[in-house]
Length: 309
Image 1 (spheres, rainbow, N blue to C red):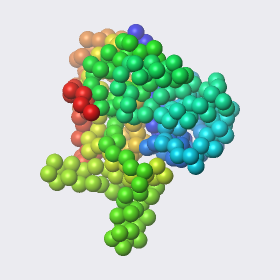
Image 2 (cartoon, helix red, strand yellow):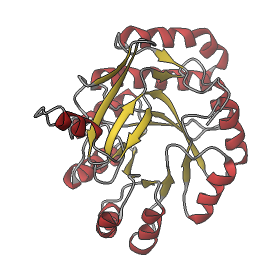
Image 3 (cartoon, rainbow, N blue to C red):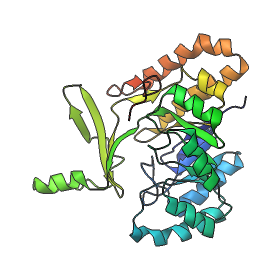
């Protein structure tokens, strides 16, 4: 067995060194115009600096280009891909085949990770994109543990799974918040407020609060709870899942640093002594519960549910 990569989404360049010390071994960063639901905005100079910091520590940097691209943005892809190849990022995360086609022509040596966020539900599809040039498939958040393990057993590409953090429940390319405020006659600029934690969609029947924000890619409604699988890692570790992702969107660096260190300890302990992990795994969960925001409960997402789309 090999240890899985521990993948983080930092909010800014300054977070990277702290998260490396906490145990992160890879990061996903990028610009809003190219990537979906990033924890932070990284311009070209910041991408270059992030690569420098990470590579000095033997850590990887991936850049997100998994937005939904329309014709007006296609001309931007070649230059950005050439830049990413020049600064030696370790991979590009894509969902749209337009990125794959542009990469073949303009950055043929750049590794690609396929991530549509919703349609990576089986190993045939993962292997299809592998044959097209993808090195990795990022599994949908809505499939269960059995499906994840079966996919890994039959996959010809690396498999990445989110193990912690919030997930997206809804996205529209429309600026729904801005349009609503305009209809109400209110002068409130909401676009680009992804760092603002004050906007919530409240469901009183379920007593659930869904973070909601707008950016260049439209309107996003996030899950009311955070996934946490720190006490249920055994099956995926035994199966050889290649990458565990901790999503840092709408999270503070102190929280991310602590969560990263706990997952690092849990993974390392399992490889050293599986029985010791069994004895301590609930302690790891309790430590995360101590720092969890009061309005965001922890759950296991779809990991132990019947997969239904």
